[in-house]
Length: 211
Image (tube, rainbow, N blue to C red; front, side):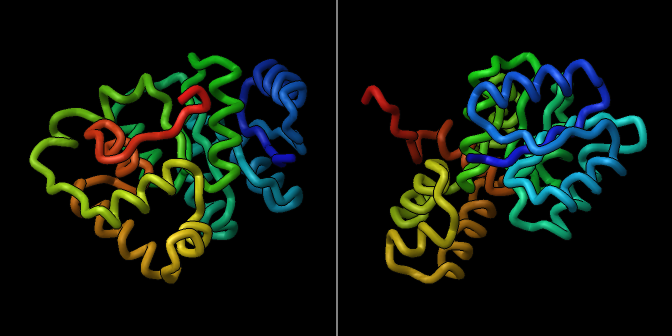
């Protein structure tokens, strides 16, 4: 069961999310309302995923994410916000967060995002495609090699670098080198952005249960 913490300054929202996500089968191990309490909560509860609001009363959820990932690099952070400002979005992705969910999304979408991130994958709310996949971000970039497409496909499906290395029989460092090359080729901010661009360009495609 995925262990989750929630960091949001609105008490009613925190409590409502905790109840709904628990009912959806997640293990909500705690909730906090500010940066300081959020850091302490993660340190003492060792969650798999942290759902963090960007705007907190004593600081930025983006800065909290950077701080947490320096101490807990395996933590899956999903930034959770009602704001779709482009610069804020890019700052959020640059923080190392593996997910970006909008509060306008459904509970099913949020649960899916949490589950994907808990398995090592990435998630960006599809409502943000117009920002992440703008012509400026996707035009005039080289095509990926077959190996790069294979690795990015597996990463988009939720596999970690370690799992991918085992799957295709290469070292973890080789996988990471390919990912860095893809990020450079696609002029992406990070691997989340690279996956989004590769999906939009048709370089990779996700499998669906009804295929």
